[in-house]
Image (cartoon, rainbow, N blue to C red; front, side, top):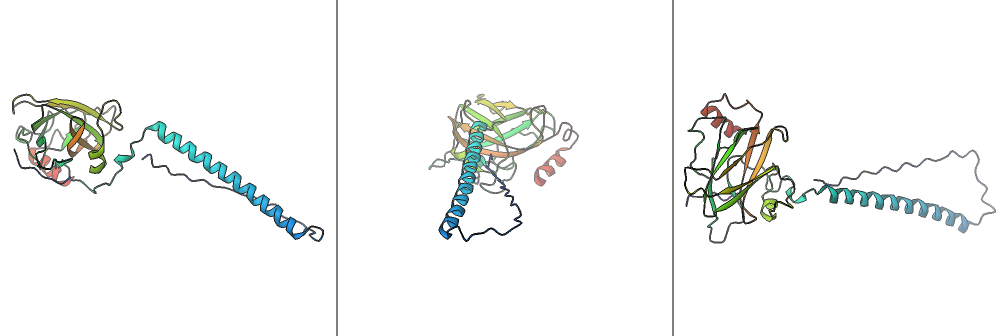
Length: 247
C-alpha cells in the first residue's frame, strides 16, 4: 500500500419590516369623563391587537420559508467552511477504519487536453495529484484501492469534510451532485477505473470537490479547479505544475 496523508444554504434569512403610521392630533382628547382604567384597557387592547397581528404575520412568513426550504431540497450539511481552506490536489481521507486500512490508498487523475504524458501520470499518489482541468476535458481516474467498485461524486466546492463523511451516497436522494461516475477495477494499473467530464452548458468554471465512496460511504475527497475551454491547452507541463501550486 502506498503511504497516505490523513488530513482531510438555503440558510433562511428572513427580514420583515413593519411600518406603522400615526395621524397627527389637532386637539388634545378630553379624558375627564373616561376612567383611567378604561383608557389603559383600550391602550392595552390596541397593543395586544397589533402584537397578535404581527405574530400571525411572523408565523406565516416562517412557515412559508420552511416550506420553500423543504421543497428546494437544500443540503445544509454541506455548508462552506467546515474545515477551513482545503488544498487542491491533496487527498483527504474520510471515515478511516481504526486499523488505518482505508479501501482507497491513492489516486491519480489524468486529462485528454492539457499536459504531456509526464504531467498526466497514472502513478497514484496522495499529494500532489493533478487537480487542474478544462471544461469538457475527460478526467480519467486511477486508484490504488482494495475495493472492486467505487463511485466518484462531483460537488461544488464546500470545504466541509464533516458533511461528506456523514452523508449517505445514493443516486436517488443525493442532493447537490454535479456529476457521478461508477468506477470499476480494471485489473491492471495501466487502465483507468472510469472517467467523467463537466459540460460547460450545464456548469461553470470553478472549484469542485471530488468525493470517492465505497458501498455508499465516503473514504476520500480532493479539491479540483476547472477552467474554461482553451485556458490550459497551450500550457507547458511546468506552467501547469506551477498553476497547481498557486491555486
